[in-house]
Image 1 (cartoon, rainbow, N blue to C red):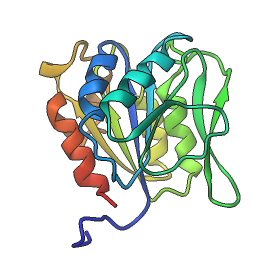
Image 2 (image 1 turned 30 degrees about the horizontal axis):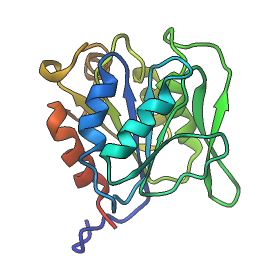
Image 3 (image 1 turned 90 degrees about the vertical axis):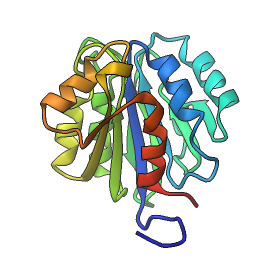
Image 4 (image 1 turned 135 degrees about the vertical axis):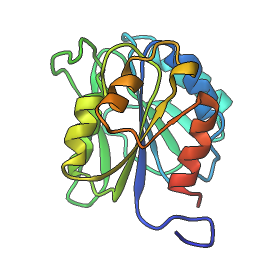
Length: 201
């Protein structure tokens, strides 16, 4: 840990949410500072056509720049990239070391598209030193398999939303039962935990 408020090493935050997620994301993203040291990726289960409005709402609430990710976007700190609905968002690492958003029409997984498992697994070949995974309210088990596979190649720290503050305690329960979650936290504490773990510029 550095003493200037910064944390050495390159990190990225990757959030998965579903039922109850849009309201929960408003609480978390709104509390993140403009000088956050890492980029943030979000997969929120939503059909095509709805994620742009959610990204705009989050952008209005946040000091960070929030957008519905476009294919080819270069991932940079201080930015939040929300997956477009109806397709899977993945991270591709270029030979230059740049990380780029790519979309795929792979089949639904866990019954959903976008599926966070694909996002997490795509980070296995990235240049990031550590991935901070945050699994929030939602039905089902999306995130568990992807994080398990990501851990085989990368340093991963997982935080999950606690049952009391979830609309549906499905996805967080799954990562807890799989032994992946480092800490279960109330919704209102997730942002502070993210800041503590990635630092500020």
